Amino acid sequence: MKVKKIKNSKIWRKVFYATLFMACGWYLHGMMVPNSTGGYGNQTPYVLVKELTKKNVEARKKYIAEVEAVNSVDIIPQVSGYLQEILFKDGSFVNQGDKIFVIEQQQYLSNLKSAEARRWELQKEYERIKKLHESGDAAEKKLDTALSQLVQAEADVERAKLDVEHSEIKSPISGYIGKALVTKGNLVSPNSQKLARIVQFNPIRIAFSVTDKERFNFMERMKKSEEMFVDVVLPGGQVKTVNAKELFAGNEVNAQTATIPVYLDMDNVDNALVPGNYVDIYFRYSLGGDSLLVPQLALAADVHGTYVMTVSNEGIVEQKYIQLGSVYEDKQVVLSGLNPDDKVIVQGLQKVKNGMKVNVTLVDVKK
Image 1 (spheres, rainbow, N blue to C red):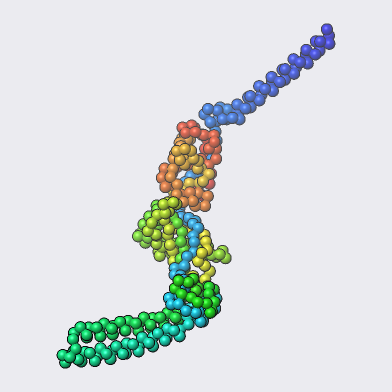
Image 2 (image 1 turned 90 degrees about the vertical axis):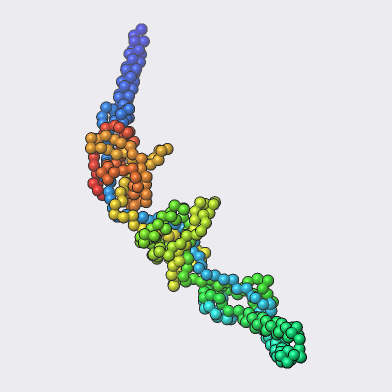
């Protein structure tokens, strides 16, 4: 019986200590977890708040743009014949009017001489009949026929001259010509493949897509003569800044992407940009000196939109939904929803809710 009492006393001690530890745990849990008022235990929560700032902010938005040639042309022969000469080096720069290909000309020169001889004969015949008509020895119809034949002969001469001219192919624009796509001795014609392609490098065109709302805003700023700039990041990492006054938009919205193309022509004297490349660009403009900024740490969102928690001078929390603009450093422009004298919670958001009272610590005033 004595042994049994000892065992019972040990069991009761274990039960006592287990109950004590559980009670302490529940007490500490109640002190650490926010209650229905948002505090820890019965304490009013502490939060950190910041004041809003006003600043002359420059909006800056990134786009991915494609480099396009302002002018480019495929060289296609306009007459048939064997390719006799290639007068350029592959990849070289050619000026407008430079001779670049020659198609065998003999047949076209021969055709021109025949056409000129035919015209000379018909010119003499027309003059003879005209004199006879004036003296009454030739009918009006015969004179008309002679004139018609002369006009046709003159047209044949002009056509033959044009064929001779087209046998010498000249560059229609200034730019860089690619490799010759046909070698000497091959038979070419207007229906055959192109002979080469010439692409203009300077000026160059930057093309990117924006929403219709962004396009409208760009055009409105241009009407007001506001300064707008585009920073183009070159392949080597250098940045070239272009005044956006020459910017122009396309005339249709892409139904699949709901965007509209925007184009900007710029100098490319050093040939840093090559058509077909993709580059990063940054479109920037001033938003003025009264832009209201809110710290990004203060932002939260729910199904109704983006909001912040503000604190009044009496320490009462108020939830305010806001409309945001551009990002500026670690802040964001507020378009609507806040007053300049509002203070927003930047730390402790998880502890508060609308209408509750909090203890406030103000940090980084107006920074």
